[in-house]
Image (tube, rainbow, N blue to C red; front, side, top):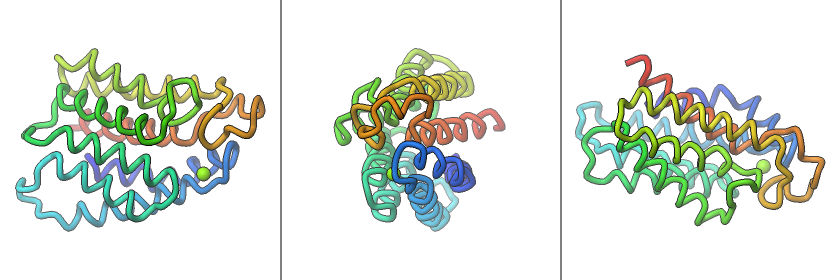
Length: 202
Ligand SMILES: [Mg+2]
């Protein structure tokens, strides 16, 4: 699943770069591509025998992003996977309950580290509704929870178009930011759609 996330983010680089150019300095796509390339190398180096725990897989992605990307995106997207992963210590399966635990810890970590709130036109605008959708679906099937989560993230990303940024990459643009989605919210949506597609195909 995480290898598919890496593949999708790497492939989405032109879209992520364009989204960041519209509101910021345009470095987001290449940063994410670099981070997920590093994460993929770490994942590929693990033995494929089930001996690596779920929490370690997610945390490894986070640490690889932090150490390879640099900048605010590296710290904050690294926190998403690292804090989400840490919350899964002891879990031996990844079901709807674990998805909710992962996303709540990821969202709390990102908000704590980046200080953004919902409505500030940042990645939180996709991640926060995704975490809420995961909690609402935590008692059911992972396929259904993942579908709800991806839909919530996409709706949040779309809603970010209408927001004036008071925080993050577009804070200096004022109303000039209206009409464009936040690039970080777009990345969150790409990540969660990849997870959705992976579990749907199993
Ligand atoms: Mg940027």
